[in-house]
Length: 308
Image (cartoon, rainbow, N blue to C red; front, side, top):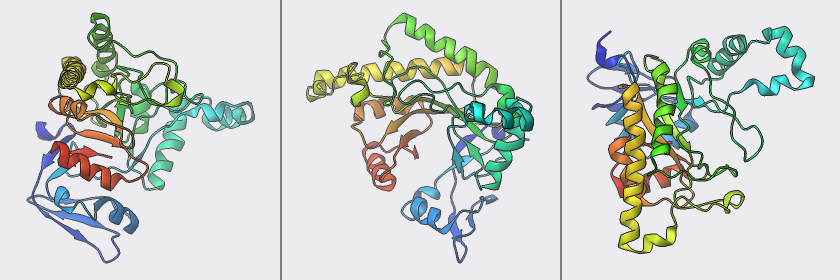
C-alpha cells in the first residue's frame, strides 16, 4: 500500500456525481474509479443537493486511497447494560467484557443499521456533567471500524456546568495539552482506523448557556466591539490552536486534525474560525436545525472546508 494512503486524508479530486434512479447508489467518476456506500434518497437530498460543486472538489480519503462517505454515530457506552435490571444480560451474554460487547454487539449492529463510522464515543453520564471515558486502544481494535477520537484539551463545552475555563496562555495549561497528546496520540498514532482528532464539543468561546452562566464565555463578546478586543481574541484563539496542533504533531504526524466542533446555532466569532484555519484540517460544526444554510454561510465567510 502506498505510504500516502496509509492514513486518512482530505484530497481534491475532479469528477462528477452519477446518481441512480432512486438515489440508492452514488458514485463519483474521477481520475480513479471509486464508489461510496449506498445512501437513501432523503440523505442525498438533505446533504448533497446544494453541495454538488463541493463534492467535485474535496473528499475524505481512506487509507486505501478511495473516497469515503462517513455515516456514523457518537456516544457509545455500556453503562446502561450495568444497571441492576440489566446486569444479567451484561454478565451472561457478554461475560462482563466490554471487548466482547463491542465485538459481538456494537460493531455488527452499527453495520447492520447502515453505519460505517463511529464518532467520539463518550456518552452522557449525568446531564450537564462530564461525559464518560473514551474507548481504549484495545476497545477501538475490537470495534474494527473507522472512528474519531476526542482529546480533552479543555472542558469548556456548552453543556458542561462545573469546570472553570482554562488559561490558554498559561504554562501549566500548555503542559496539560502536551500530557493529553502524549497519553492519547502517542498510543493511537499508528492506528489506520483512526480518522482524526476532535477537541472540545461546542466550546463557549463567545456564548454561554444557563447552566454555566456563572463562568461566562471564554472571551467576553462585548469586547469584540473594538479593534483591540478583536485582535486579542484572534491572538488568544491562535495560541490555543497552535498549542494543540503542535502538541498533537509531536506524537502523531499523520492523522487528521478535526478541531473543535462549534455550535452553529450560537454566536461564533469569525476571529476564532480564522485562528483555527492554519492549524486544523477542516472546520467542524454541530447543527440540529439548518446545517445547509449555516455551512453555506460559514463557507462564504471564511473560504474554508467544513464537516457536519
